[in-house]
Length: 280
Image 1 (cartoon, rainbow, N blue to C red):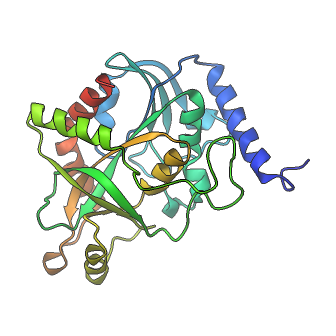
Image 2: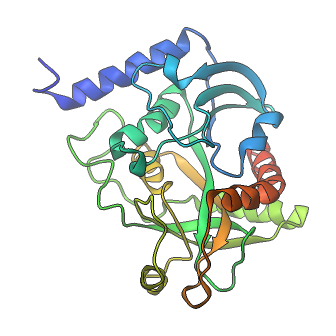
């Protein structure tokens, strides 16, 4: 049967190709998958890296085009826990569809990961939150206009209609809050809304998003979380507010400022994630 006649079989074949390519270099079975988004790059220094695989060496793996996303798959240990980490991710605004964007999450699961830790840079719309704050994600709103599960269901990996009543694991949130309290890290809690970008939002759009119940806004995270939950992975999401998106006091933002704010908050985020993973 051809892939055109059975798209599900074609996707599974590509996933197996990629897993086989990784297994040629590493037999590590990770417990945790980590997306090293903006603000968590320094976590690489804490990893006991066993294998480094550039995305370009892996069949079917999407390649990042954004300058701050290196594009390497790292396998090793963090606080003694076997992990697989993505150093760089792709986004819808780069021209990838959501199935391509979430392909690496499928790979993490097939390698053995049961937990996904995800981070990134966001704009803060809640007036009680400020630039540099860490926000523990409790829920999200998908305004990407698409869903990575559209199309034939991958029955081997998850159900046709996955439940999303708890996209971000409550026990992992409890653990993160406990660690933050012990380490004196101020950890906010909020709802993430995803839009395609690459433009930032207008004042009117920020007002709308705030009325919808969102606290932070970004251009990633939600597709990966949906796919992780489809495969019954537990998810911990922690993001950095890199700019304040208050409609009545809105100022222009540039990438340099976003990256600088993320770097200043990076030590807090890496310390939090390192300790949480170590307690799993």
